[in-house]
Amino acid sequence: MYAIFGDNGAGKSTLLRVICGLARPTAGTVYIFGSRERSAFTGRLGYMGHAPMLYDEMTGMENLRYFAGLYAIGDSARCEQTIAAVGLDPALTRRVGEYSQGMRQRLSLARAAIHDPEILLLDEPFSNLDPSSARAMGRLVAEMRDRGKTILVVTHQAAHLAGIADESLWIAAGRIAAWERGIAAAERAAAAAVVS
Amino acid sequence: MSSLAGVTASNLRKDLRLEWRSKDAVNAMLFFALLVVVIFSFAFDPTAEESRQIVGGLVWVAFLFAAIVALNQAWMRELRNQVLDAYRVSPAPANALFLGKALSNFLFISVVEALLVPLFVVFYNLRSEGPAWQLVPVFLLGTWALVVVGTFFAAISLRTRSREVMLPLILFPISIPAVLAMVEATTMVLTGTETPRFWITLLLVYDVVFTTVCLLLFETVLHAE
Image 1 (tube, rainbow over the protein chains, first blue to last red):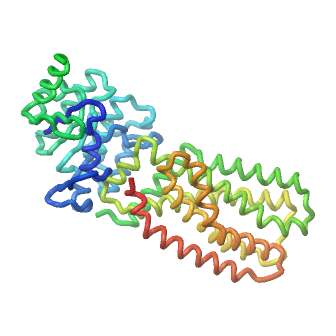
Image 2: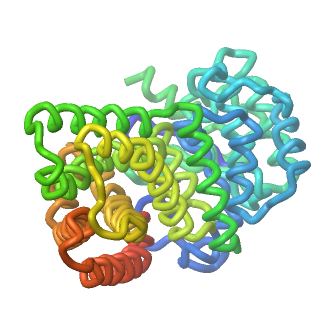
């Protein structure tokens, strides 16, 4: 798991959007699984954006069934397993518009992981979460890492990834300013900010 | 890889479900078209013969303006919560999204037409002098013409700042041949003066050409930044 830190506007979210093909790089080329063709990796990559990317008027299961269909997954049991894996009740009839922020974030993670992708890109998965929901989200991400997924997490909250992230990057003005083990890059940058 | 038919059906089901729960598009269209029927009826107070001459134009102008409401709403749903990005990163075919959206818009506008046509008949004291069944292909082909081009241009105007204004500005000029054919064919059937075969054929050709062009270009539009 790679944790990506940086100040606002440093280019963290843009990096994820470029990797998953939502934005085009101004320079350079992105190779995923040895290919730069979108079609080569779309089904093997999951993206959880800053926004939940869910339909407010539909229930959690309806949302997941719809997004599973985009990956040719017609198995309703798989949707139930995925939604249960993020700690939500598949039988919940409440619409997503009535969910709490924590529930939305968890369902958004389930949406990104519904097709069991090899690479997961998570943009601010801990934002707007209370401490216990953030800890629960951290556990979910750690479980996914332990199942062998490559995960890139963009966040400002380094503490939630302590002991989880294998490596960390500090991005400044669109460039990698530091790349270290654990969350050392974030800690060093935070210390430097305090000193300056 | 997800199949075009399967994902199209899934998109259609999703759009119908969202509209059934929110009723945003149908309510707005119905209210707008109803206003046009009533206001023009009182403004002109036409005789039965005059009605047959002008109603073709009134009907299609009312439905064209009402369709704009539905077309803008259709894509707004995809922008909320950035759901469109989730579709863009998936391997689902782009055209399945376009077809699902066009078919759902076609159904919404057809429902509004089915509800309002009887009102036009009552308010304008209409009686068709020609074979009324010919209005069926005119309405089906005419509605598809509005919907297919409208859905495509609504997707293009999605990323512009004043998209509500932009859509009619780019849609109306390109719809002129179709609107002309709809109005002429409807008037000919109502007045019974000539056969509308030429205009119905023109509508059919317009539909085939624009459906093909839209399907060829939609993937580029969807993945444009």
